[in-house]
Every structure is written in C-alpha cells, then in structure tokens.
Image (cartoon, rainbow, N blue to C red; front, side, top):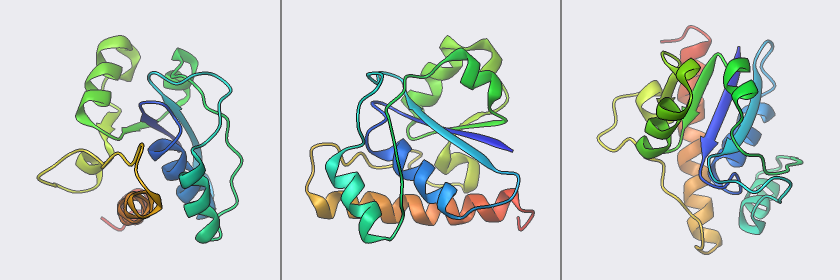
Length: 147
C-alpha cells in the first residue's frame, strides 16, 4: 500500500507522519509526504527534527510539493486538515475516492484537523508528534486488518 501524507509546507506535520510510519517498517507499506504550498528542496523544521531525534527516529527529508505523479502513485492520501483534503480533491481529479484527513480515515473525531505546530516551541511540536503517533497507531491497526 502506498500512503501519501499532505500538509501545507511539508516541514512539520506531513514529514513527521511519514517518519513515524516509515519507522514502523511495515512490509508492503510505502510512504511519501508533500505540501500543497511547499518549496522544493527545503528542510524539515528544526523542532520537528529534534522531536524525531528524541524519539530515536532517524529520518532524512527534503520538502516536496504535491505532484500529480504522486497522487497517481498513492493508494491512500491522508491530509492534515479538511482544507488540505478539499484542495487536493479540487486540484486532482484522480484523488477522488482515496483522499481523507488522517483523523477522518482512522476514527470519527469531532475535529478533523491535526494541530499545526508551525512557529511553536519544542513542546508544541512534541504535542503534535504525540497526536500523530496515536493516529498512526490507529492507521496501522486499520490497514493491517485490526479494524
């Protein structure tokens, strides 16, 4: 299964989600991330990198913008917010039927958005990491047939 995480700039939430899922090393699961407004070739945010290092997750990342070829590649597109989801569905006809917010895909939450740590302190990033880690545990359970 090919899973594509999408956020705004591909510096905070989507690369952390990608790193967390890749770290689980699940056979047959391939992961990429991108940002709707990402600058090509940038770096993961320092606080995202620090949190991943604190969690012993090794990760190399270069920011990427959402591309049609990656939309085609993906079996499942998981966005960080409803605005990201709606924009992907509006821009890419081939995203229909496989694009959801991460939260709406894994469980019925009242809020469908993952909190954005951008500009926050290290603790803010750690809270977003914890949120993503819980959601990805639920995702792994769902895609491996546990739900």
